[in-house]
Image: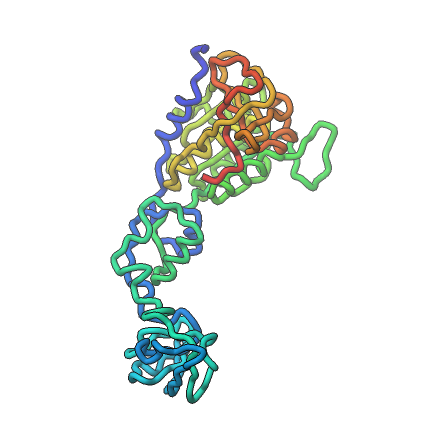
Length: 410
């Protein structure tokens, strides 16, 4: 490999050495969804917090109704009623019954609940046609969670079930790392906003939407900035305006060898920036460094949409996940059988667009479209990337290959 081309691993290492998890702080529960817990959460109470009824029915002493059957029912006086959240009757005497609703506290003196279905639903007196077993239909205090139990371990990615559990034990917040604020800048005087007319030499700005959507899906807060023309001063002004709200900046375009590569021209004087080639296809021209007083990480990605998106997957996604405290930081690879042969240039790690499917005989992946880094239609038709190592120039059909499944949550 040429000396001026770095490996994918070395460039990723450069990036991960420069980013760190964001400071954690207490987040409201609904804001914590999808974030990593930055604490061990210990139950402050037990669940259930008191013995309560698992059915609508009658609280009884099981010994009083043990002989009940359809042929020989037991009749008991009903001495009160307890609804959930409306407990006024706290105790009952043997030989009586109390009407009770699901979730209501079981009164002292009762040890079982007879469901309505086993009774005549009497008001002053109830006929019981079937006996519960001792403790049946009573949810015992602490049978789910005991006070002091570790409910959620540090690093757990919080999902709906975790949020529900935290709320159930009275936690209104949980310490977690926030979503990184990612600013996306597209450069190019030829770019136009979707919904506006095109000239004979202009194109719509798809990259900023592509990258903002990818950042949002990764869990970040994405700010898509308007198009920046091919003027270094305009680019630096736009960048300076955005740094106040950025934990990370992503640009697309302007990092190759052309006369109008504005990003490289504007940032190259900074000794905190690196520009060069990475041994991959697509996505060879890359730049990374830090800018501003807060040393905000900045990724300068190539302008072709496929190159830009694959660069995001390989380099930006791990940085976002590192900032969020998520693990693993890189998308895991899967093994799949290749349905059609592919070729690859020597010395480059190629990422081939593919369609990954699990079918009889195991996972398969089918190459999609051509190798062109401008073919966003083929990219949209893909759900995976076939990873061809640098020392492999061809892969026959039927071979097992490494695949990045782009639609997989991890």
